[in-house]
Length: 140
Image (cartoon, rainbow, N blue to C red; front, side, top):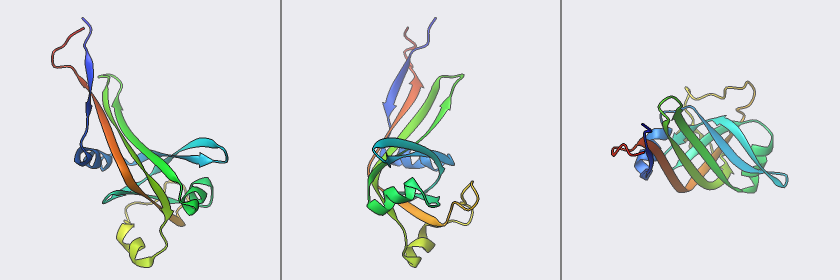
Protein backbone atom coordinates (compact mmCIF):
# COMPACT_ATOMS: atom_id res chain seq x y z
CA UNK A 1 0.00 0.00 0.00
CA UNK A 2 1.30 3.43 -0.95
CA UNK A 3 0.56 6.33 1.35
CA UNK A 4 -0.58 9.43 -0.50
CA UNK A 5 0.52 12.93 0.39
CA UNK A 6 -0.89 16.33 -0.31
CA UNK A 7 0.34 19.88 -0.07
CA UNK A 8 -1.43 22.40 2.13
CA UNK A 9 -0.86 26.13 1.74
CA UNK A 10 0.11 27.88 4.96
CA UNK A 11 -1.19 31.21 6.22
CA UNK A 12 1.23 34.06 6.86
CA UNK A 13 0.75 33.50 10.60
CA UNK A 14 1.64 29.81 10.26
CA UNK A 15 4.68 30.74 8.18
CA UNK A 16 5.87 33.16 10.87
CA UNK A 17 5.40 30.59 13.61
CA UNK A 18 7.34 27.96 11.65
CA UNK A 19 10.19 30.36 10.84
CA UNK A 20 10.62 30.88 14.57
CA UNK A 21 11.30 27.14 15.02
CA UNK A 22 14.42 26.82 12.86
CA UNK A 23 17.82 28.54 13.09
CA UNK A 24 18.95 28.23 9.47
CA UNK A 25 17.52 29.34 6.15
CA UNK A 26 18.81 30.21 2.70
CA UNK A 27 19.19 33.69 1.24
CA UNK A 28 18.76 33.80 -2.52
CA UNK A 29 20.21 36.81 -4.32
CA UNK A 30 22.07 37.85 -7.45
CA UNK A 31 25.83 37.52 -7.37
CA UNK A 32 27.41 38.94 -10.50
CA UNK A 33 25.07 37.84 -13.27
CA UNK A 34 23.81 34.61 -11.70
CA UNK A 35 21.59 33.49 -8.83
CA UNK A 36 23.33 32.56 -5.58
CA UNK A 37 22.02 30.70 -2.55
CA UNK A 38 23.79 30.98 0.79
CA UNK A 39 22.79 29.27 4.03
CA UNK A 40 22.41 31.82 6.85
CA UNK A 41 21.38 31.81 10.44
CA UNK A 42 18.62 34.35 10.91
CA UNK A 43 16.10 35.95 13.19
CA UNK A 44 12.52 36.80 12.28
CA UNK A 45 11.53 40.25 13.51
CA UNK A 46 7.93 41.27 12.80
CA UNK A 47 7.56 41.07 9.00
CA UNK A 48 11.29 40.98 8.33
CA UNK A 49 14.13 38.49 8.23
CA UNK A 50 17.30 39.70 9.98
CA UNK A 51 20.69 38.35 8.88
CA UNK A 52 24.08 39.31 10.24
CA UNK A 53 26.93 39.06 7.76
CA UNK A 54 30.39 40.26 6.87
CA UNK A 55 31.59 41.92 3.71
CA UNK A 56 30.68 40.04 0.55
CA UNK A 57 27.94 39.44 -1.99
CA UNK A 58 25.01 39.35 0.48
CA UNK A 59 26.04 42.73 1.85
CA UNK A 60 26.43 44.14 -1.67
CA UNK A 61 22.94 42.91 -2.63
CA UNK A 62 21.54 44.71 0.43
CA UNK A 63 23.50 47.90 -0.34
CA UNK A 64 21.96 47.89 -3.82
CA UNK A 65 18.49 47.30 -2.35
CA UNK A 66 17.98 44.17 -4.43
CA UNK A 67 14.83 42.10 -4.26
CA UNK A 68 15.91 38.80 -2.71
CA UNK A 69 14.32 35.61 -1.45
CA UNK A 70 14.71 33.80 1.82
CA UNK A 71 13.67 30.17 2.30
CA UNK A 72 13.57 27.97 5.38
CA UNK A 73 12.19 24.48 5.80
CA UNK A 74 12.04 21.39 7.91
CA UNK A 75 11.78 17.95 6.34
CA UNK A 76 11.15 14.58 7.97
CA UNK A 77 12.77 12.27 5.42
CA UNK A 78 11.47 9.09 7.04
CA UNK A 79 7.85 10.25 7.21
CA UNK A 80 8.20 12.16 3.91
CA UNK A 81 6.50 15.19 5.41
CA UNK A 82 7.65 18.71 6.10
CA UNK A 83 7.16 22.36 5.35
CA UNK A 84 8.79 25.18 3.43
CA UNK A 85 8.39 28.95 3.80
CA UNK A 86 9.46 31.52 1.21
CA UNK A 87 9.86 35.22 1.97
CA UNK A 88 10.42 37.63 -0.92
CA UNK A 89 11.35 41.24 -0.31
CA UNK A 90 13.85 44.02 -0.68
CA UNK A 91 17.13 43.67 1.20
CA UNK A 92 18.64 46.63 3.00
CA UNK A 93 21.46 47.34 5.41
CA UNK A 94 20.32 48.35 8.89
CA UNK A 95 22.47 51.27 10.08
CA UNK A 96 20.22 53.23 12.43
CA UNK A 97 21.23 52.60 16.07
CA UNK A 98 17.62 52.49 17.35
CA UNK A 99 16.69 50.01 14.63
CA UNK A 100 19.74 47.90 15.40
CA UNK A 101 18.78 47.77 19.07
CA UNK A 102 15.25 46.73 18.09
CA UNK A 103 16.28 43.88 15.78
CA UNK A 104 19.37 42.46 17.46
CA UNK A 105 19.05 39.64 19.94
CA UNK A 106 22.05 38.75 22.08
CA UNK A 107 21.21 35.08 21.66
CA UNK A 108 21.33 35.42 17.87
CA UNK A 109 24.95 35.47 16.81
CA UNK A 110 26.52 34.53 13.48
CA UNK A 111 27.80 30.99 13.39
CA UNK A 112 30.94 32.08 11.52
CA UNK A 113 33.34 34.26 13.48
CA UNK A 114 33.92 37.80 12.23
CA UNK A 115 30.86 37.63 9.95
CA UNK A 116 28.37 39.67 11.95
CA UNK A 117 29.63 43.22 11.49
CA UNK A 118 26.68 44.12 9.23
CA UNK A 119 22.97 43.62 9.76
CA UNK A 120 20.69 43.00 6.78
CA UNK A 121 16.93 43.16 6.76
CA UNK A 122 14.68 41.52 4.20
CA UNK A 123 11.34 43.25 4.51
CA UNK A 124 8.68 40.81 3.39
CA UNK A 125 6.61 41.76 0.36
CA UNK A 126 5.32 38.23 -0.04
CA UNK A 127 5.28 35.29 2.38
CA UNK A 128 4.15 31.89 1.18
CA UNK A 129 4.42 28.44 2.63
CA UNK A 130 3.49 24.84 2.01
CA UNK A 131 3.23 21.80 4.20
CA UNK A 132 3.56 18.28 2.81
CA UNK A 133 1.19 16.10 4.83
CA UNK A 134 -0.18 12.61 4.73
CA UNK A 135 -3.45 12.43 2.81
CA UNK A 136 -6.15 11.59 5.36
CA UNK A 137 -7.91 9.64 2.59
CA UNK A 138 -4.85 7.37 2.39
CA UNK A 139 -5.25 6.87 -1.36
CA UNK A 140 -2.65 5.33 -3.58
